[in-house]
Image (cartoon, rainbow, N blue to C red):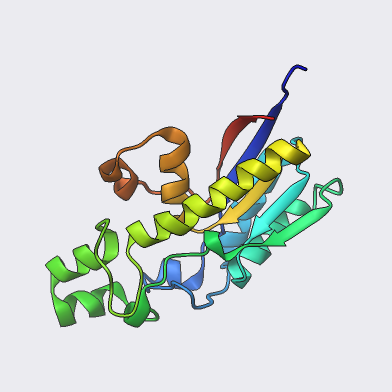
Length: 194
């Protein structure tokens, strides 16, 4: 029996107030800005003619709200699933603090280690390595679901959960993954044999 091609449409939630103000958001909520909604609408229009059978979001409202914007064009989508393995990185004690304030208090070297190194763990938070572990668990589950149900899926993700997701599918090195800047107004399309 010939296998068909299924798709994973991965996109970042729309920009938020904290994103614009360079505040560590992590697991806290920050509302989509007007510009964030516009960019999510752009992604929605890019995906308008694609089939989406199931969609995933984290419990954070910015992920949920972005997905609602996308799915308004997809009445065929019958499954909307919350899965926090794709939630944003937990920045621990840094959350709700401006980047500048953290640099001033702890220095640039510590900031860079906590902000973008692979193994740097902010106080009471997660490293990107830790995020990658849970994202890989999600990917394993996702591929099994796609292949068994033969479906296309959309994922309303977060900047830091997208990094290991992209590393897995695009075969990036850790260094390349860490340097990624994920767009607010575009999506990634990964093809899976199903």
